[in-house]
Length: 83
Image 1 (tube, rainbow, N blue to C red):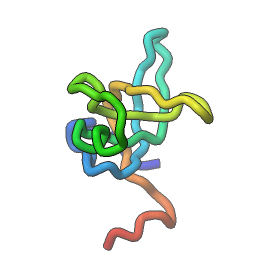
Image 2: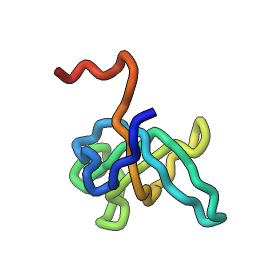
Image 3: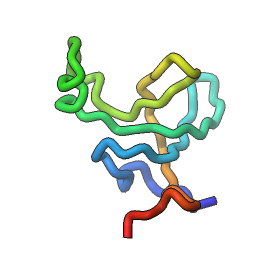
């Protein structure tokens, strides 16, 4: 497992990363999430505003939710071919 890093250092280019966040019940969660800027959201169509930009994760197989992660981890394993 990779070390947790501050969310401010996470990539915001639309790539998917593992993030850690606490829900309203105080439960710590680990999810694969993607940062979506307002421009990226508007490109998909629909009505979006500044409050919609941020980190998005699937909370079940059909539902995405905007979350507020506090940290993230670099991907490990064979998917890391950035070099």
